[in-house]
Length: 415
Image 1 (tube, rainbow, N blue to C red):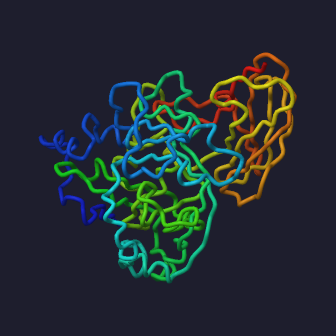
Image 2: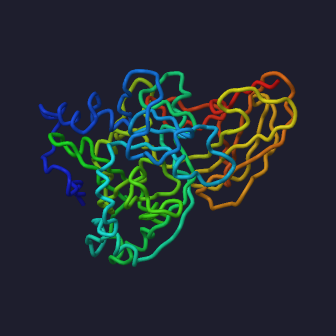
Image 3: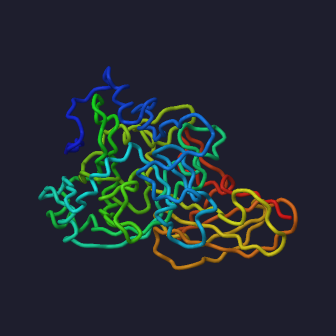
């Protein structure tokens, strides 16, 4: 089956590489100096020169400036100190990572009229958000994490945003289960191995749509817990986070959770969009992504410490609470250990707050006595099937999937 990746806003173009006017098209779209090749690799448009803090872009004006780091207009990171000790990440603190500029805010003027094309089912059709609401509703708490979270710790300095821990958050989504939509349309057609989502961003004219469109495929079995969500943390999804409608695939990295979703298709093959075929691939250092390499999809067990003093400053000697977050990707996190000596010895931490399900993260805490001096605080999580967070990262060209506990450790000065 062939997926029609054109949206109502996308140009109808034949397959080809960049046209002569592509540089102008990119500039007009706010992506001057960037290329579809960079987009497919998961890279971020370059930031303007200068070291002064960047202002929030208009579409993200609701963010708390004190809680975030603005890297570019499409990449905003949560500060390590801003996660707090509650499970859910508030919208005003949640990171932003968009592969393309957000659509015009006018798409939110009538959220209920947003239309989704569903293909690869026995009765394919287009459904409005209003119609989707009638098919069912569920709520899921899950970790949303950029594939490049932790890239900033790679000594090789891969291209892309140098995220540390702040390209992640724990969010509550509400919407209709994908399985309910498929059932309402007669079920998934035979032989469909993948669930493919296509975003509704406006595409620059003069480019091959497949070279830049956000379209990703995940195994069809991911449908079991996937949602077509219209609500985030109890409110309509903001434009910055994919409203009015977003595909949510719990346990999978952020790029697979398609914003502004315009088409959901069950397909026999993975999408041939460049962001799928060559982008977000675990390529060896010094090489480029290609379809033979593993795709960045499922998350794995990970944790990090958020307090005390994760961003500098002196900690008072004596009793301190070490606080952090841990999650298991597709599996619930089972335990967390904390070290105050850089991993030479470990103590079991306790979970804090409610357990919101296997896809959510757990807050953890450990009371420790810290004498004066320098200390390296680290955390190590284990999931329910025995996977242990590794000490070292897996080196790769784009800095993806960094779960290293050594990289995520924090050094504190105690006085």
